[in-house]
Length: 82
Image 1 (tube, rainbow, N blue to C red):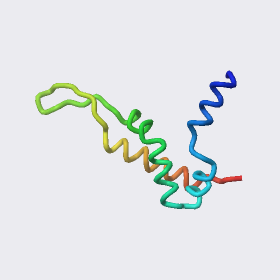
Image 2: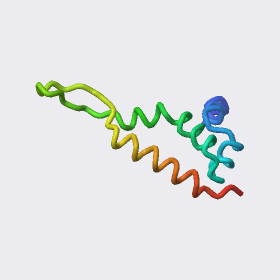
Image 3: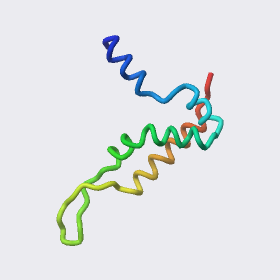
């Protein structure tokens, strides 16, 4: 991986301080993590759905979105910071 691409990925991560606070259960830090990963979670939870006339459209599967958010919270709180 090139140095520039690695730096770009590092810039796109939540701060170490936020991760530490989230692992301690700080609600504001957990909300920061949810906000940071919001677009990724929305992308993962977008599904092909059908309206009442049988026409397909793309929308957010709220159940899946909620499950992904809960999983992120669970992992963040269980995370062990060295």
